[in-house]
Image (cartoon, rainbow, N blue to C red):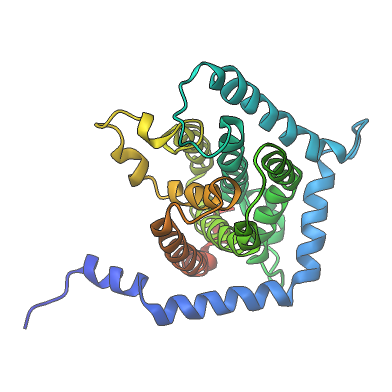
Amino acid sequence: MSRISPATRWMRIGLSPSRNSQALWTTFNQILRYRELLGELVDRDLNASHARHGLGTWWIYVHPLIVVGTYLLIFGFVLGSRLSITGDFPGDFPAYIMAGLVPWLITQAALVRGAGALVGSANLVKQVVFPIEVLPVAATISSTIPYLPALGLAILYKAYVGGLSWMLLLLPLLLALHAMLAIGFSFALSAITAFFRDMREVVTVFTSIAMYLMPLVYLPDWMPGALRPLIYANPLSYLIWVYQDVLFFGSFRHPYAWAILLLMALLGLGLGYRTFERLKPYYGNVL
């Protein structure tokens, strides 16, 4: 009888539909159960860092708008005016950039903040009765809220320059899949960071580089043929393509990206939560 290798065994366990489904169900139940606590954590996270500032919590929303505006000015209007856009391009270049840039900035903030969810709240982790599972979820929510006005601006700008399509009705579904994926990453990254503190810096560097390995500020056809596989090898490219379908193209230009995003969201949340729970007994010793 042939023996199953450890790698194969762990792959089967990791991709087990029943275990991942159970993890998904548990995560949703905990979010509902501790929704008031989540609200308090998010409110504290958003308000604490700007409590004594002149503009107060307005900086939470002003800063993302300035970042988006800077990228839009440089890549959209300055560089975009010098680029030769083909006639079949459905809209203007700044609208294309905003459709992918804002979702990516949300993801970037969620990954960086999610990685430090446990380390930054070590005092809460060491409390026996505190449900530490809410910390990565709260980190993801609090990193998303500041970019919602920028997302609204992207929608208004597209409505102004080219109109919106019925695909905008799919935005709530897309936001739900995006949240599942981001929370799953936060679970896994926060668990790893508790043991490997450099992980947060690794995530920061990776997200800074990954931006240019996705079709955010350029069209995929502009990438040299030898380097184009890097775009498709980056799993987060498919998230951006789906957002571009909804906020820019107004049609299913990338149907395969929807299927891949759905799979990533389900597996990401399931595996992320299971990783978090598996390492949970050791957090108190390393924090």
